[in-house]
Amino acid sequence: MFVTFHNFYYYEIRSGGFTIMRINKSGFIFTMCLLSVFQVQATIIQVPLDQPTIQAGIDVAVDTDTVLVADGTYIGSGNKDIRFNGKAITVVSENGPLNCIIDCENTGRGFIFDNGEGLDSVVEGFTITNGETSGDGAGIFCDRAAATILNCRFISNLADDWGGGIACIIDAAAEIRDCCFYDNAGSFGGGIANFGIDSGMTVTNCIFESNRTWTTFSNGYGGGIFSSSVGVSIEQCTFTDNQASDGGAILCQYDILINLCDFSK
Image 1 (spheres, rainbow, N blue to C red):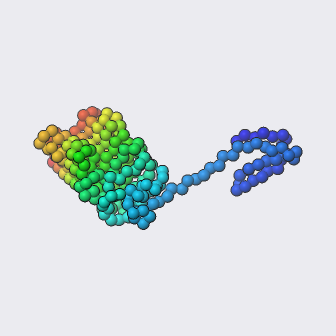
Image 2 (cartoon, rainbow, N blue to C red; image 1 turned 90 degrees about the horizontal axis):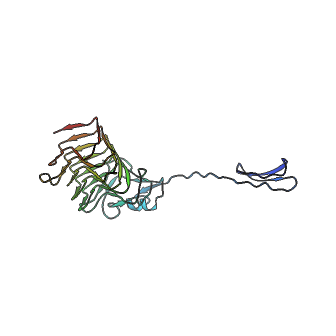
Image 3 (cartoon, rainbow, N blue to C red; image 1 turned 30 degrees about the horizontal axis):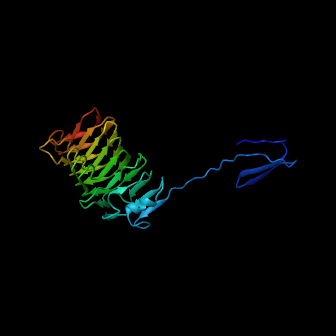
C-alpha cells in the first residue's frame, strides 16, 4: 500500500472492514493501493449425482476441486481412458477400491496423464481392472506428466509393451502408495514399469502378487516392477509369486532404493 497525503487530518471511508478512501479536511484525496484477498473454496463434484461419468466430472472441475465417485462399477465411454487434462484435482472414490470399480472391458486404459500434470493430480480409492492396450500402461499411463496414486487395486490389466498396471515414461513421475497389483502383465514390468532416465517414482506400502511379463520365456523383465530410471525408491512393499524371464520381482537398470521389502516365491 502507498499513501500520498497533505496533512495528518483526514476523513476515512471504510467498507467491509477495508479502508477504501481517505480525504483530508482540505479535500485532498489520499492515493491508496488496496489488496483484496479472496479465499477460493474448492468444489466437490459428485459422480453420478452431478455428472454422469468420471470424465464429465473432471471436465467441469478446476484446480483444487474434488471429483467424488459413488460406489459401483463404471464402464463405457467416459469411464475409461480418463484424462485429467492438466488439472490439479483429486478424483476419489466415496468408499474405497472394494466398492468402486473401473472396468475397462479389455478395450482401453483406466487413466491417462499426458498433459503436463503434476503430483497434485491425485487418483485415490479405485479398483482398475481389465485394462488392455497395445502400448504402455494398461491401468494408468503417465507420459511427460506426473500423478499421485493412492489406495488403488490393479487387477488383470494387460499391456503389449511396458507396465501392465502402471507405466511412467519419458520425464514422467509418480507417487504410488498403499496399492495392490494382482495378475497384471506387460512385456516389461508386469505390475509397474518406468523408463526414461528422468522418470522418477516412489512406491510405498504396496503389494505385488502374481504379476508377470507376458513374454515370460522370451526376454520379459521385471514381473513386479521394471525400472530403467534414476530417482526410484521402493519401500515397505511385498512381492509374491511374480514371474519374468529376468527379475521375477524387480529388475532395474540403474541404482534404486529398496528398503524394508519382503520377497517370496
